[in-house]
Image 1 (cartoon, rainbow, N blue to C red):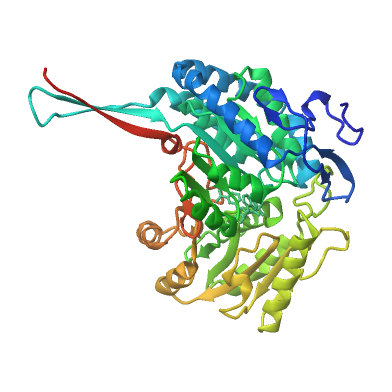
Image 2 (image 1 turned 135 degrees about the horizontal axis):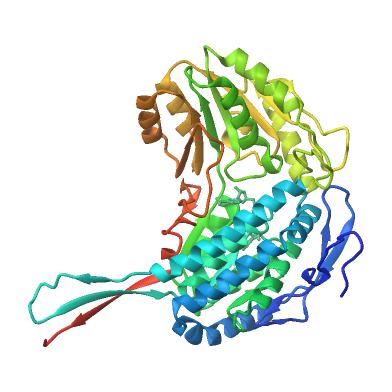
Amino acid sequence: MSAPRSFGLRDADLLRHQPYINGAWASGDGIPLEVTNPATGEILGSVETITPESVAHAVAAAEVAFPAWRARPAQERGALLEKWHDLILQHADDLARIMTLEQGKPLDEARGEVQSGAAFAKWFAEEGQRVYGEIVPSPANDRRLLVFREAVGVCAAITPWNFPSSMIVRKAAPALAAGCPLILKPAETTPFSALALAELARRAGFPPGVFNVVLGDPAKIGKVFTGHPAIRKISFTGSTRVGRLLLAEAAQQVQKVTLELGGNAPFIVFEDADLDAAVAGAIAAKFRNAGQVCVAVNRILAHASLFDRFVERFAAAAAALKVGNGLEADVRFGPLITQPSLDRITALVADAVAGGARIVTGGKPHALGGLFYEPTVLTHAAPDARVLREEIFGPLVTIQPFADDAEAIRIANDTEYGLASYFYTRDLGRLFRISGALQFGMVAVNTPVIASAASPFGGIKASGLGREGSRHGILDYLELKTVWVAGL
Ligand code: NAD
């Protein structure tokens, strides 16, 4: 099928419309899924979906592929991942364009995501070669005790729409590097980014059945994954609601589960912070991807001594952000993903205002109409306002004052979530005290950047289980096997 004119890709073959199973594009036997451009409302095209029975066939294909894939030397698996990495970078412009069209983020941001996603393929191509075992000092002289790390088996991944490319590579690369075949179910709103990655995996030369993409009813596919005895691990990135559900379902087969769920990140500006840097950092960590980021700032806490100055400067910077179609130059953030997302932001603002919050800037849908919402800053939100308790996932933030470090920590930790947290200070002692006291999986000090292939990414409490990226990211795809050798 040729690319619709609106995609304007250099390599039209990256635009695929079918699930990718066992090394081939599969015919759909489910209800086709339409994909919409959130910036324009235009229908971009549709993809074929499959029934749960066909998903089970994909699992069977992965099961068949597993023994040979696991048996390949890690260097060979790594070489294929390196090829995938190179192809992703070669086609970064097209992949970014597909992403902006179906997801809405600015083109530069989309390109950045494609590149940072590719970095996981390279990282795990190398990390797969460092899956060391152990020789344990034996408790008896005539025995040796060896520990090996082995691939867990067929894995399933479910990914969200907000990072439609990097979330996929972040899961696929460690699975494949470890010797596990993977079946991926991407988000319904952004399947074209996933299928383009599958096309590049095909070109990289992964054997049939090693990397598969299925499309269809999420709840039913989730049940196939959790109900299938061949699937030994599920890696999920998405909402805490669905993560809880999958964790409960995975109990049936006692599958390993990695969960990257929602967040409610605090951003604390201490009285000794570099104010310019804190304002710029908060803008970046709040409004990237229109705030639709799991590590996006949800609540800003500013020390009482600089509260008014911070609010004024932050709100002015927020109001100056250009909102629009991500294909246009200089646009800083695009539309929300769907109408329910926009309605949720409207409801969060109404709830906060009803409880006494003041709107400093924004507070309503953008004049552009459609799914665009103004950059919005609130103060004086009541402690029980939804905007403080829930993950916002939009271009809206509250700022509240605090009197001292103890109060900042109390407010920051007062959430069921524990993913990302940020603070700005120039005091070395405070840096260590506060990062020790924050109950979050990740803490960023004096920077809005909290992720890279090299660092463990993940949360505690209701934000999830396990870590992705870093040398730890491959461990969830491996089991320990203990071998006792006696009679020596
Ligand atoms: P979502 O939970 O609605 O969907 C995520 C994925 O789960 C999608 O592929 C969806 O089709 C699938 N899904 C939905 N219902 C399912 C079910 N019953 N069984 C199996 N799969 C099901 O979340 P979303 O709105 O797509 O993504 C936003 C959420 O993802 C936010 O909460 C965000 O914080 C979180 N997120 C977390 C991270 C992280 O690394 N911690 C990264 C990105 C996004």
